[in-house]
Each structure stands twice: as C-alpha cells, then as structure tokens.
Picture 1: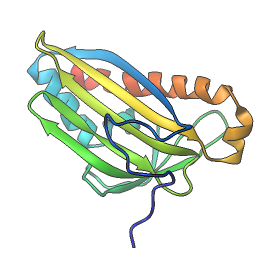
Picture 2: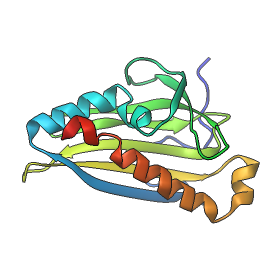
Picture 3: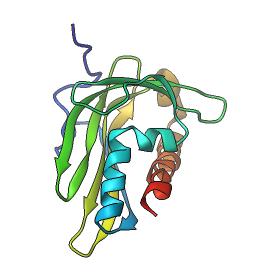
Picture 4: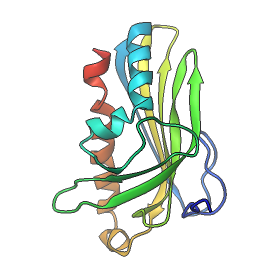
Length: 167
C-alpha cells in the first residue's frame, strides 16, 4: 500500500494550496548558460539541493523519480527531524527541470515543496523553491512565528546548495 500524504487533496508544482496553508517561495539566479542549467538539472535529480543543504540521507533512492519515497534528517540546531516525502511530479523540459515532493505521515509539516531550475531566454539559470505548508508536529505548532523564520533559513541553505555545480 502506498503511504498517504499528510494533507488533503493532491499536490501540484504551481497549484493553489488547501485552505489554511501558507505558500513561501524564493528564487535566486544560480548560474548562466546551458551548461549551468544542465548541471543544475542533473544535481536536482540526484537530490543535490538536499545534500548541499546539509541534510542527512536516512533512506533515500539514488535518483529522483515520480513515486520515489525519501527520508531525510534535517540538522537544525540540536534537532534532527526526519522528513519523509514522496515525489509527485518530475519536470524535465528543455528550459525547466526539477521536481515536487509531498510530506508523508511523520513529517513535521503538512504540505509539499518544489525545486525548479529555469533557463531564461537571457541565459540566466534561476532556482525557484516553493513550499506549501503548515505545521504538523506539536513542537512546530508551539514554536509559532519562529517556524517561518526557520523555514527562511532553510530556504537560503537550499538556494545556495547548487552554487558549486553551476559556477
């Protein structure tokens, strides 16, 4: 039996969130040119953002594929929450590459996130990370507004994770 997402409905890369969910999106230029885009796409499909952000692989397949389940440990201060997710979509287009994965039971947040690299007509390679979320774990609900601050820190780590492969 396939593990269920921990939120209502179906996730989507660009879709609307369920009522009561927040959307946090950040983008950054990570390189320039087709070679930088190809390097970013390869790295994203090999979990490069997660690895480059300092996440620890607990149970992770070697490649991102639709339906793949991954479990990461996210070091954040003294905490090491496990974040189980399932890939719901893989994007593999000439100028757009990445994936989206949704939180499974046991994840400290309800929701999903996507990691998309885009090659603009100008040659810029832009990484966009979109998180649709609300706290799931009791400790996250009790943390209140500091959860959004922690998410911002984590997104900065994520956006910088591909700098070595695209420079």
